Length: 398
Image (cartoon, rainbow, N blue to C red; front, side, top):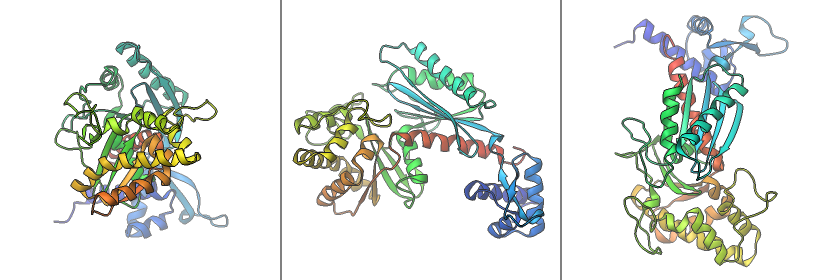
């Protein structure tokens, strides 16, 4: 059954906006070529999108060309403003951006373990509001939040998870109640996978598993270009995976004794110490993006001699234990080592894990280093906010 004229117009408009989003400013002729639409149809949709305030003339296609055919059309970037938050155990980072994803302002707020729930929530919300004002933005349209823990796949709410600060849930609830913006919450590791898929190490892969290596351990499952969250939102809770080499087994409320006990930040630091590798550095030796301990130890090992080699080999063996279980069940073909530790280890650690994994599993699996480090969560949260805004604004009547 053919689409009605109004439906066809809406589909054409959304297609043109997606192309302008992906490829940057385009002329009407370029839009005609890319969409396959007729010249009059393209002229009509350009008029509609300009009238809706979604696109504008941003220049001309050549220095010597003038007239309507030379006009370059681009999305009106300040049509909507977005925010992304990365909620960690002891900090919150925020980025405010325009509709094209260009960063306008950013900030980070440390939150001590002795900070009460209400003060922590108030400080985090105040930081977001202050950062938005600094960017000179209008009210935020969409806010993406990346947080550790389980996200209910039905309600989209952050579930109460043992071991996480109470202020995490309070912050999400406060944002949803105080802001007029759409607030979307997603597991931090899932958002990192989205970012690595869009602009990072997995751009050429629609099926892969991302292993997050930071303060905690997590995994994200991307199959055929879609995140798989599981029935309760817990797909990828690999920290609870029972593995050999630990002092016990994990429980339903504590991942100690699971894979987390082998390769979490504290375990990596202990392993480094046993091999004579420092797990800390001076302020000049560390960067804001690094985990101050585990990632530094990995970088130090890459510069060290025999002790560094032995540490990296031991770490690769431990990582392969958990990875082998994931590979045996999912056969993803590609594993991305992400987070601060994954980026710190780079291609050297990835190659070692791939070699150890090949000894343990008959399923061929390429192991890659993530390229976005700890910033992947913010990038992914910004993608989520941007898509939400576009769905609303690019829809008929949006």
